[in-house]
Amino acid sequence: MFSQRRTAQLGLASAVTVLIAAMVTIFLRPLFDQRPIAFAEPGNPAPYFNLHDGEGRSVSLDDLRGSVAVLYFTSVNCPDCGAYNARIESLAQRYRSDPRVRFIAVNIDPAADALQVRVDAKIIGRTFPTVIDEKALAATAYSIKSTPQIAVIAPTGILRYRGPFDDNAVESQVKDHYVMDTLASLLNNSELAAAFPTR
Image (tube, rainbow, N blue to C red):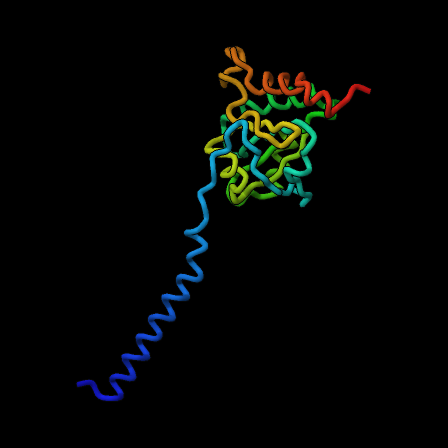
């Protein structure tokens, strides 16, 4: 037989154990209840994001609504991005005066330094904004596993393309212009023409 003191100690220990289990359930259950992020597949709504550039200005998916948005996922430390920076800038320049198209670079370097990102954009001559995704939230939402990668979003907010810029890192050997063709297709779309009537 347990003494009264021992019985009280066991009762207290049991109560503490139950309390700890309840607290763990309360705090950890939301983590397990979260559904995994769905892959960002063309034809589905583009995942929401709200990021800031190197000077603290925000750019969100809502800001791009009504335009064809080209998201260029890039990294300061990615050698492959070097082969594409000039190509993407050239395409951005082609549409620079077209209000229907917006280009945004998304830097996904972990713990990216804002100054480094600004300097890199200046050195490579990027004329469109660069936002910082240091926690890879947008990259994860858009299923981006490497750089460079592109996402093209229709004015309605539907993701129309996600993948490489073209089919070859060597520009002279490119045969398929994925992003260029997607843009041309969207801009010739009758729905887009209705959204941007000819003046």
